[in-house]
Length: 391
Ligand code: PLP
Image (cartoon, rainbow, N blue to C red; front, side, top):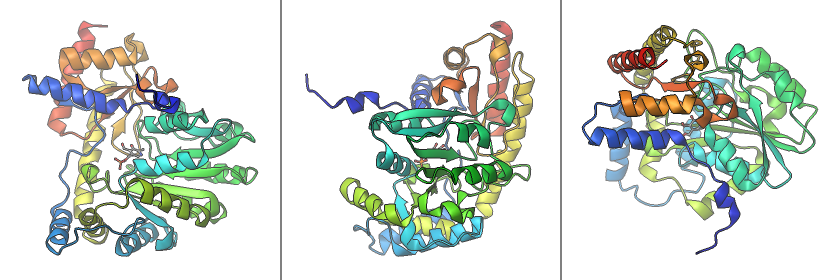
């Protein structure tokens, strides 16, 4: 038996991918599966973005780019950051990454070691905890409570900071709940962080413009007092329906950007050039497709919430961002993962059990509404029948 280091035994999973694999297998066996499991837009990448990548290939952009990304791409990110957040950043603080995930990997690797504590949202994106455990640091869950709109509570978050805390991970709008943390709460959180000057902050803002009902995301970049310890994760995957292009960006303080650039040189050299040209076109081109996709997501969100609330034993708070709903299923009498599994096997509806997003996910199920209204209605019909027959 080959011996690998124990850290690898601590790496977790993103179970949405396992659900996708099971759903795909059932489909290939001829089953009519409706997939509300995976967190990726069901839209194609807008054509002008695809054309920019094709043009880049035709123009001969086939080689390495700088490890931190093409200057033109980093300048586009700086422009977009100013438009969306009002914050002025230098292209020198930007890293173009192969998706959003490498930023969390790099940030957690920079601060995680045995004895260190890292705070992360629970329920939350499962890779945060997985990577914290990989480094040997202690994961400290910050509860995202339903009664609080699945937002961060400044008071509760601050109460969990200790002199061992090295990194605080924030995410709003949030996966898997759709929660958006209000500005007043972030104001309080940032004010409280003044007492913990050695704690770094990683703000995962990948769903930043995906909000509804007039909710706006407040970027942590709006707070100059924490800029020297703030890492912002963002990317193209969700907003421009580009999950498979593996294009993300992050913004780093002066003291860290050099280290992350070196990590990139060691691990992946650079993101492929055509994708970076596509990324520039996404930012600088017309945003009409983004608007169209968001209008569709909004209609689907309303449909999911209405249909979920009509299910026996289910209540669903209205998500304010991203493209997920996180209904409470406690009164159905089902354990969440068992329910998700039974729904896939027996009703051919893919959803992800709340415990796949953390300890506090029990009692919930994640519905990704990145699917058509017709399919959402078909899925919810099946879930209703299942619950009526199996309460
Ligand atoms: N952060 C959050 C909160 C996410 O939900 C996701 C993807 O689901 C990511 C980061 C990773 O994005 P990417 O696919 O660009 O790596």
